Image 1 (tube, rainbow, N blue to C red):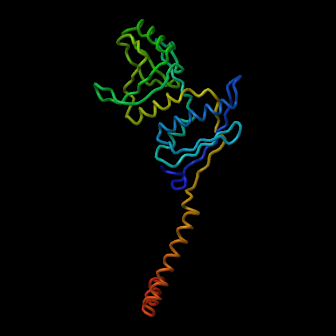
Image 2 (image 1 turned 180 degrees about the vertical axis):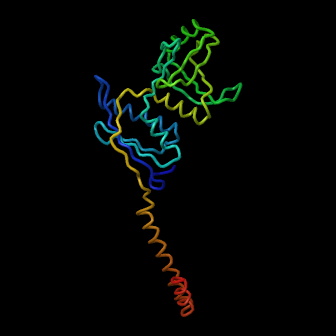
Image 3 (image 1 turned 90 degrees about the horizontal axis):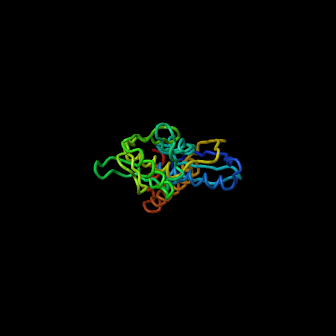
Length: 238
C-alpha cells in the first residue's frame, strides 16, 4: 500500500445533509460506505474515510495519477436509469451489484449487472414487450450504453459493452455498485498532505546517517590511529 506517510496526498472534508425526513447518522454512515466502494474502484483501497463530526466526513487520499478522477467520483450522484423512448422504465435501486469483466465471445471489456427479484420481473416484462427496440442506460443523465433488446431477459443479468478499457469498466462498475448517493454532500475544505518522510522522517534519517558516519570514523581512528584519523578527516571534509 502507498501510505500517506510516504506519498503525501490530499484531505477533503465534506458536510452531509440527510434527505428530507432522513436520519443524519444513517445518512453519514451510508455516504461513507458508498465513498469507500467508489474509491476501491479507483484503486484507492488505502484511502481513509472517517467521520469527524456529526455531519462531516474526512477523506484522505494518497497521491496517485488519477486522484482528480477519484475525487470527482466521490460526489457523483450515481443515479442509474434504464429508459425506453425517453421514459424511465427501471432505476438503479433494483441493481444488486455490478462487476467488470470481459465478454466471452469478443473479449471486450464489459460491465454486468445483477438485478434483485423485483427488478428481474420488471426487466423481463419490459424486454419481452420491446424486442428489437433500443434501451438507453444513463448514469447521472449521461448516456453510458444503448443496447438493442435482442430477446426477452428473464434471469436478471444484464451486460453492456463499449465501456472503454477494462480499468474504466471497473470504475463504472464500482460507481454503480456503490449505489446512488441519497444525501446532499458539500465540500467544506481541502488541503494538501505533505509526506511525513519529507519532514520528521528526513530528520530521523539524517540523524541515523550522522551516527553511522561518526561510528565509522571512530573505528578508523581506533583501528588505524594516525592514518585512520587522516582518512576520517579526509572523508568528512572532502
